[in-house]
Image 1: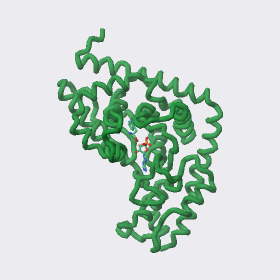
Image 2: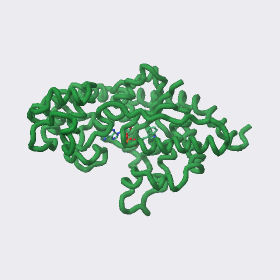
Image 3: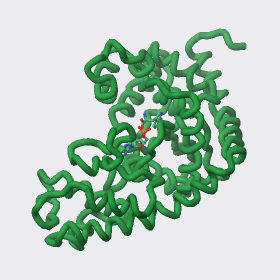
Image 4: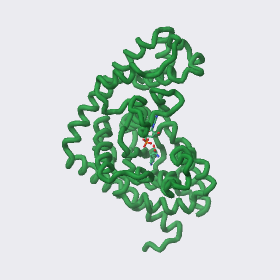
Amino acid sequence: MKRIFSGIQPTGNLHLGNYLGAVKNWVKLQSTYECIYCIVDMHAITTFQDPKKLTQNIRDAAAILIASGININSSILFNQSRVPMHAELAWIFNCIAKIGWLNRMTQFKDKAGKNREKASAGLYIYPNLMAADILSYKATHVPVGDDQKQHLELTRDIAISFNDSYGIKYFPVVEPLIIGEATRVMSLRDGSKKMSKSDNSDFTRINITDSKDVIASKIKKAKTDSLPVPESITALSGRLEAKNLLGIFAALKEVSLEKIIKDYGGGTFSVLKEDLAECIISELVPVSSEIKNLQNNREYLDKILKDGATKAEEISKPIIKEVKEIVGFLVA
Ligand code: AMP
Ligand code: TRP
């Protein structure tokens, strides 16, 4: 049996990278699989979050996910901190994962930057909590963007090491689902940098809630080069910004990169940009208006997250009880 789990941090500015790398795929997977989607507020505080803003960002993330098509009747949607099993399993995994494994995590290196001594211990063990999120439900498949691949490899290592240490085939070895033509959406201003929530310039990203005019202007100003649009996959080499725009377009239209290149290759970027902006607008603007409706209904959002947590806990509680028994804790 396949069980899907994935998470997103409520740190504001959810963008087209989150949408194409994660959310759009989450929505699609719902029709075939049992899906559990989590707003990972405990991951968010690995770097300091203003409490009022965090609460707001949790509700906003819920509104964005529901407006994008997460079906709360068939999938489970909740915020992480409400289900204590994640933190409990994370502790056990802190005792399984090796320091050497964590030292290899590139996301930690990027986020901690030069002043590693000042990074929180939480930021360092972040991937162990992520493994606990997934394995608290014995999830088998995890849809994410390309940047989370390394964390999922660590999750696999933790599952294998736990199973080996205790001599029991308990946890599944999870499979990443990195789907589509935009698994790593890049900054609109610099094709070598990932589109990110925390970039100081808003012109580097399309936020899911951007208005029609803002989207049009950001795409118009997106960096390109002075050559015509590339005419083949091989011609994309070294043309990072062109590759990014074509990839975004293909992912939105759910066609192959080759198809977009066939349609636009050899032409001007201004034509490509006009059609791309249209396409982004027609995908995101209806979502934005639904987000606004949901944001006006705070009680409804809170109830969804609370009910989701109850359902999530029902699944994870017996699993964590078994894990404690396997480890040798006295539970009865
Ligand atoms: P985060 O915003 O870090 O919580 O990421 C939530 C999800 O969005 C994860 O599955 C990420 O892999 C995905 N994601 C974040 N940024 C990008 C990006 N620039 N391109 C593609 N996927 C992304
Ligand atoms: N680390 C992920 C990110 O930053 C978010 C996340 C936390 C997650 N727990 C998860 C993703 C479990 C998938 C599964 O994007």
